[in-house]
Amino acid sequence: MQTDLDRSLRLPHATSLVVGTIVGASVFVQASEMTHHLPNIPAVIAAWIASGMLTLFGALACAELASAFPSTGGVYVFLRDTYAPILGFLWGWAMFWTMHSGIIAAGAVVFARHAAVFAPIGDRGIRLVAVGMIVTISAINYTGVRLGSRLQTTFTGGKLLAVALIVVFGFLIGARLPAHFDYGSANGPGPVAVGDFLLALVAGLFAFGGWHVVTYTAGETVDPQRTIPRALTFGILIVTAVYVALNTVYFYVLPLDRVMASTRVAADAATALLGTRAGGAIAGLVMFSVFGALTGSMLAAPRVYYAMAHDGLLFRWIDTVHPRYRTPHRAIVLQAIWASILIWTGTYRELFTRVIFTEWIFFALMAGGIFMLRRRNTYRPAYRVWGFPWTVLIFVGASAAIVLNRLISEPLDSAIGLALVGVGIPVFYFSRRS
Image (cartoon, rainbow, N blue to C red; front, side, top):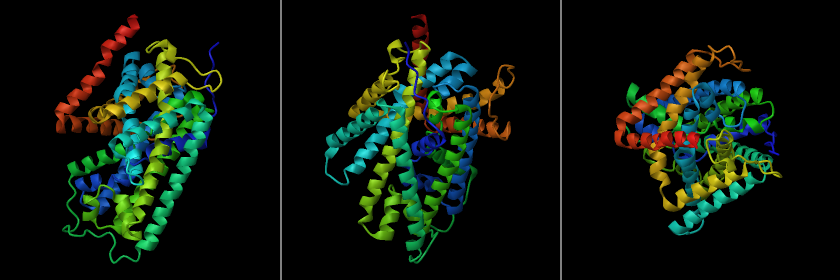
């Protein structure tokens, strides 16, 4: 007899999954990427707010689809049921081989590199720590969604507390500094071109990555038609507030030219406030933040592979639920093995950077599919996206702009990325025939 997944995730757990998965290491480093495109402090803050609002529009569209299709698998299910099984398969194919596994591997390496601040472990040691982290989180998720979600909630609460302390002490202690919102050696606020703002917007949107993963756990969420839309809305608003607050503190403490040149802006801001000893504290915070983000990310993704196997698009042995822990245990193990291989071989960098932009093609299709679905008499979502059709159109346009920008700026890598995803097409038809 098939064991069902454990339906135990409630609104606090789902919201923490949204917040905890998004807020990883990028908020502590991404400011330099934003200021590189926009040498203008108010414009950078505006770009962060705009990124949050665009992400919210996408999340609202995702929420409507989640209320209409409250099944385990999230984006895979939306694409499968809106268009055709092959689109859902290609999403899951790209997730496992490149996009999601690459993100997991990259995050684990970031964790390990910051661990090297406390002990000289070398390159081999960094890889061992990264793989050990993946094995640890996988073991936690293997033994039950309750434990994994509670751990995720705890880490998210800790991250939000740490951010609040940084903001409060940043403004209190930073008030002693001689200048605030200073441009340093830069010649005042630079001009704001539309193209530069769009590039900064793209960088901001990537920092919001992972907002959709909560939909993967619909089969383990209590009342998913109501819980998931609320979790997405609350979660995105919280993350936007966190990003804007932290970046405001960075500019309050550091001159713009320092922010532009920094690859560790949070550590540099802490050093300006508390001296060089603060660097270790920030390294610990980054490790804490990355661990929490990967806990949620690694909890959610195996549900997609489980759903694909349930549909007969992957090996049927993946379509099993552990009789005691009620988790997709084989999908969890498979993800851990492949992400560890990517870490040990170092191939995650090229795969991730070449393919990650393709997820925005799927996002555009996902949101745009609402226009098709609303013409169907059988379509009965429990939640309807606010501001339709404009919010959906804006998100689809932003997704298309991201893809077009990537194709123009890096055509060779983009072509390779599309080819890697396209390899899944013959595999899909072969699996169906088999």
